[in-house]
Image (tube, rainbow, N blue to C red):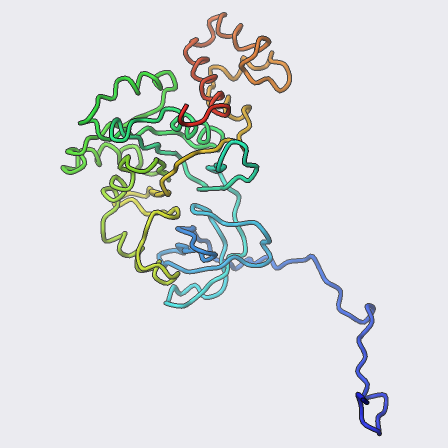
Amino acid sequence: MRRYGKHTDEDDIRTRPGRRNTRPRTNIRPKHEDAAEGLVLTVDRGRLTCLVEDRVVMAMKARELGRKAAVVGDRVALVGDLSGKKDSLARIVRIEERTSVLRRTADDDDPYERVVVANADQLAVVTALADPEPRPRLIDRCLVAAYAGGLDPLLVLTKSDLAPPDKLLELYGHLDIPYVVTSREELQDGTAVARVREQLDGKITAFVGHSGVGKTTLVNALVPQEQRRTTGHVNAVTGRGRHTTTSALALPLAGSDGWVIDTPGIRSFGLNHVDPSRVIHAFPDLDPGTEGCPRACSHDEPDCALDAWVAEGHADPARLYSLRRLLATRERKEGD
């Protein structure tokens, strides 16, 4: 069958242009110097809720970012429709440099690390003193992740009406970690919330904890219902009718320039990604003593210079014990 008619000439025949006639691809990308600054509040199935000035804007990641993903707490640059109106959509064209990163892996032998929160100042580890029982190994793992990611840890111990906090506090006393102890009665009358707020004002704080410890109850008490309802309305644009803690969510702390980031309940906290040399930086009294350590020292071997450093009186032996206990969490499961 003829592809062309009987009477054809050269102009009727379509030819594919040669490579020399095509426009060469370029690696030059637009700088987007007029892009607006925004803060990622939550991420839901590829759509990101961002705060741009006083407006909540829905956005998607630009293709030019490749595999680089934005997470809650990221400071980003956006272009496109920044009105914040329903069904409007902006585009994230740049993710600014992060000051801190909270990472975790599914398990210790999982090579894939997941960034949970970016740019947080501190990590509030919420633990019940009873019902459910405290899990010190999980607390240790959260502390290691905080130290490795550049976050200051904060212990929030709930349900002190069911059990005293002394035993657990003694375990972490030598780490000099700030803490707040709360009871269910104090949460109801607001005294516990006031004490927690003192540790949060002016900071971005990520809250972590396993199911049943009262993390979400505490976050609800810290953030007025009006703000959570507003967030729920925004999430309806992404397809969710209301907020649930299935993904991290940043919420402004009422009457303060601080932020609270509520994260999903955790069952495990893998540390495959953690470099032990990063954890030692959280111990400024021990860090100088590592200068005499052998290369790639685990800080828990016969040739470790920290033993001599402590024996010479430069640091408390209990601090070295605490460091080694935290580093050993990479070899222990949470339930051990």
